[in-house]
Length: 432
Image: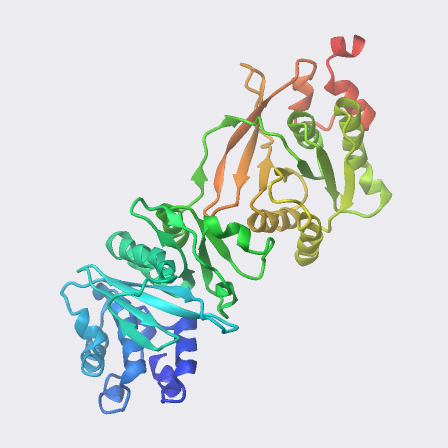
């Protein structure tokens, strides 16, 4: 790979070399397989090319070094000052990219910070093509501080695999204080950087970003720990079970199968508006949605709106949902019940939950039992407004008139909406 990249290098091809470095530069010993150090020993490959190859060699795990890697290091140590600066033994390095907003330019550029476990620091400014040992933080240079702090944490606490993935997959912007709180920065056009890398952006900048931005993978961080969870790909974070007591502005429900959990979410969460998404266009297939709508109107005075959502084409399903959710104010509380519907529909909803931070998902496990003490009805709750997502359980107390044996059974023991309602309500309540 390095031998191929060498073809980019000349004084008038530096921009191409930098684009290659941002996109897919090697950071593992295996990436250098087949490279003959002797090919570089007598060639003119100094300057920017030598510096960037040196950075790649620094990130290679010392425990994975081959004889060829050690020879390459020796060759490039004579051609670049980068390796000389990080010559400590042992010396472990991590590198992270950050975006640079360039005044009066349509597109941004990028910077790179390299940290070593012996407290070495080096920055690279791709716009000016300059290296420096410290960054000029004024007037808006503080936006690289999160990348700098995260690189330092990676080199001391991360695994080698995490160091490589962070260098190859992420670009990070954000200020950070001594307590690990991520601060707002000037975003400008930074997200226009032509890259497939995933962005980490301060949580405080959320309102500046166009809602429903599906073309970029953008994660938000409020603390250093949030950013750490992103780049190290930590698993879903646990939420303690709580009573759901907030006002729900909109409840969305995937329709299909047994409608008991679908009805329960409506009558227990008591939303202002309800939208029922069904997957078939024929009138016969709308019956479950109509039954749900009947019970919602009869029990809670709510008139759901019935909408079509394809279960066959995920891009079409995502667009249908996005067309609706784009018009919801971000200060509204939105809950989406994904208990039913097929997997493609639920994946489309997950895309929406990733794009719109005020959307949370709920799911009712078919084996979930009622907790008789307080007659608590439980849903699993999934929050994708951060990554890794949060998961926990919420519970809502059943009204005294609800027949919980019927509502919580797995059987489809009802003929239509009217029959469902009559069995949902306890006989004594119906007699009143």
